[in-house]
Image (cartoon, rainbow over all chains, first blue to last red; front, side, top):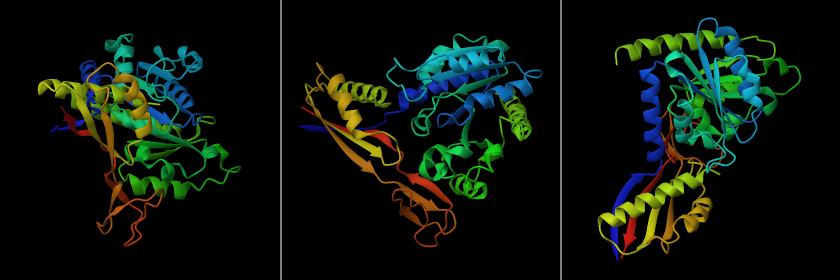
Length: 227
Length: 113
């Protein structure tokens, strides 16, 4: 018997495809965000609100990840410049998007004409946090009806987020969601994350989120210009 | 379930390594899985039995070493082991913590004949 030291990261295969995706996106200056949340927290609604507010200034494409159906892609189809649906049901990984799926989807997008790419991940607060896709920013949405304990229960997801969105703030009179306690839990795990409170239903607060996004895109464009 | 692709990688890495040293059989694969990693050893084992069939890793035992969830308190720098959702510092009760360990997923070594 012989023991052989290996010490090799098993996620490396995914990470190298993610890095290649990012190179391709950077070549075409496509700012890309990975939107993650539990099912029903408002990923599609946030995408629709973001497109409604920014489509006069930016050309926006969407990648929709779902276990099954094209429901979300149908909703977004008339608003976005281009939508690609990924159904994960028949893929080895059904609970999250992985970099290889994005690699495929990018082939169907006219990247040279896209400014902003919104990737809607599969609704899930665990698995997507393990798989880089090639995105520039990671966004996590938590909504009021889910309860204010999600950052405590799924800490890894919130630790890696660049921005955390508290959605459905119009529910505040009807649910026991302690917004300061939730903010505190997120800030404790991840002091760098930006927090936004908004309602995709009423539109309140969406403006702040969009301004941040525009700023991030500007910073990104300056960065890729000199690469 | 997202262990399929991961297990494919494990089999591939182990087979490549065994080939490098011209081994005839892989008897054990020693894996390190972090407590916070979201990968379930039982699922990896399930896919491994299927994916290793008809390879020299077919009879290999998977050995899982759990890497503890280690946190560092941002106030007093104490490093401690997180239990479930108890993420407060045991020294100063600070709630602001940084993950230092527990997200690992790697092959430490393989044992071959």
